[in-house]
Length: 257
Image 1 (cartoon, helix red, strand yellow):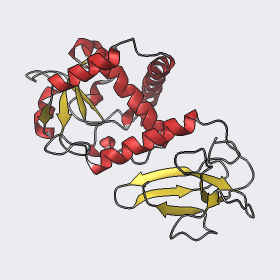
Image 2: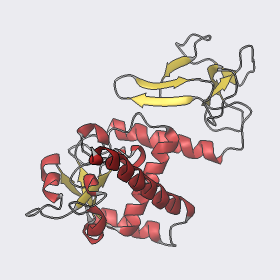
Image 3: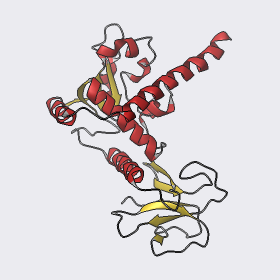
Image 4: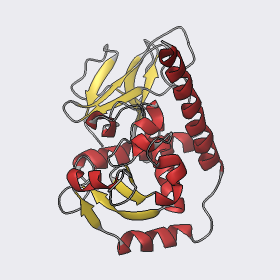
């Protein structure tokens, strides 16, 4: 009975720790020349791992090392053994790809679904990329994991390309001045594609008292259109219903740009 009360508390503490580290990552700029060094490091190590091979690097007795994976990229985290070693707080992250757990905090027990980040928001995906930057700067890159993010040749999968597009979209949104309409909720799944929808909290997460309809929104100075939620009756040449979606619908499945 005691364990059932203690476990959620421990999990809460570890999630707070992850959030604190992420805040530090987001708050600092990479050192000058870091990107050039990272590029060289990536070119020197291009080993492709299968899931079975990677499982041999889980840090347990007799294993070959301590490897962590994020978005399909493999890093040697042996020097962080006090964090990632057997029995330590972040041990669940080694020996497999648990990218989603960097945001969700699901690190008590690994499952293959934890490599799937399609249910995360664009902003959360951007945060995972920031985590990847942390490993680029602090640990040794070892190669790529064949599967969800890379194919047998080490090339980006279509799934991975969509993730990167969504990250780019989040970065573009962040760079834009505050817009007159709240942005849509966005979700991508391999089976159904991209879904955009409106709710009374979409955009900034603050309750606004109306839901709205999703529209493609692009002013002339914008390089590409993006989805916003507009109140009923709003009309503008810059607001266009999505193709093959009822103009009165609160959600749409859209083609990737």
